[in-house]
Image: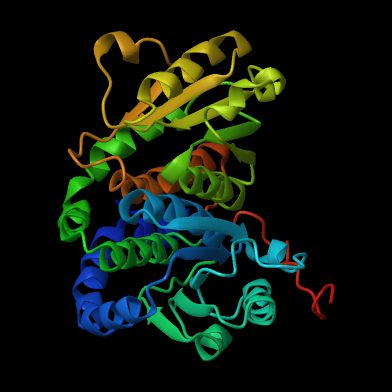
Length: 358
């Protein structure tokens, strides 16, 4: 399908399954060397850092790595590392710092890596990105997702590929090849046409929402952040992300009939997360749930649902949810009359000339 508005972004979103297949194939050539290195280091914990969408990847990856491998993990925004006076973990334990950046040149992440090397000289740094940049030179090792950088500033394919690379790394660390078998199925598991039909219904709601809150916990926390970021970037609509279960503690009082919530529903906490979505009915906000599947009684309790029907585990579904929230932002932008390729022409990126702090 061709779109006069947003055609470039749409093509990049649609291209993700192909890029995932390519990345899984190409990463295999690095496996032996990395497994040897990982075993020799025997890391006991991992700190994951990144900015913007890459921090969202860090959030999802930290939870996935912990759940699959059992390692202690913590995710922090790169900029927050600059405030630290000591490592955000037990420095007596061998530590891997996993730095995530699309182009390897994000200043905050570069500064954060430099800061961690000062705070904990014994830590090892692994950089995962799409281009080497300065981080490639700073890191002890690097993994690059080649050939996935986009032409548009809306990061879709690159971000999901970075997430996929962290999931592949999780397989190497844990030795659980069954997880890799599931990842290989992801490229074929998403029915784009069915997903788009469901999302067009979401985008056509009246009145148009003025603010959208994405709810996700555990591995889905990063999806919620990514969804909010894409909605801001593509549709220029206010958006935020919160923990699914934490949200019931008063956060919802600000919702109105001009609001929308989008809940990422897991298997582990399915009943509780759906209960939160159901009980938001009193706010009059439009409610969307993204879930593997709903039965008839469940479906009638929310205004909109996006059902994946992919047959994969809740951890593998994290990857599939990235294109879903991207397409949601895309169709909301079109419904609003905004070009997703160029939502806010004239609004410039904010840069800092000097490194903040000390």
